[in-house]
Image 1 (cartoon, rainbow, N blue to C red):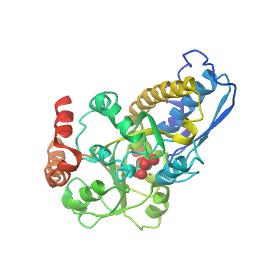
Image 2 (spheres, rainbow, N blue to C red):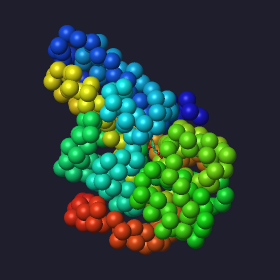
Image 3 (cartoon, protein in one colour):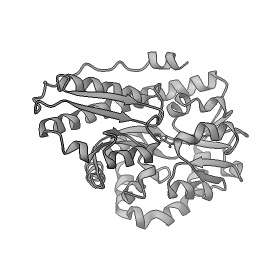
Image 4 (cartoon, rainbow, N blue to C red):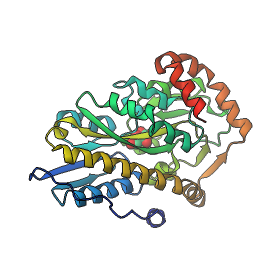
Length: 328
Ligand code: EAX
């Protein structure tokens, strides 16, 4: 099924843009991600590799690492800071302790459509967040998406917060996500993505939440019989470069990497969105029981989560929340 999904991905675009004059030196970018080789994110990285190698006329070589081979999201970010890894693209959520402004991407049901997410990420708010994240030894050069998160579990079908009572749900390492699942009555545990499959397999946790494509490409459906189409949080990926590496590059290459990250982000979002429904159907075909929620059931989840907004509104910024709401 992995090969089949890959075969139906929108083709990797032709590289556009001229060859860029560098400084005569050769560079290598090791680019590591937490998701697997069969996801949309890796496909985006393959396009990034094509662009960067072509436009540097081979002076920049890009080496891709998936499945947290070089460390989980937080470890990869530390490696950028110490200069032992050049690039990574984590979900924003595990970085919220470093960049509190990222918390806006953890609020439940804030982004009603992918188009609203695009307006935020590709507009002033997204630009200002790239600026904020360009600190602490990091340079932030673009956005892609993990996507809308869905709940899976090994126990029973879930269509209301009542079904979550005591359910052990793995969350990303993020206080708002913990708050969400506690507020819904579940028993959440933060854990790195790299440890998640084993934790699900061994029953350390009953459930987790991630977009369909991440659920399938990580084979969580092999150890999770049930899913609910909650769409409760939209998670971006942020494309990060090691500042130590960045400062070695001529400006011409820096500019080209920014353009490549933008093109990767546009393409990756196209792949992610075009595969979302197809992969949901494949999960059903592979035997997962997927519960689609009625609008009323979604409203029940939203109303249950009102306290989360009360708890985080000041930290995230009321104006920011209102401006995103006004986008829709
Ligand atoms: O790199 O931790 C997660 O659930 C995310 O999907 C992960 O950040 C992907």
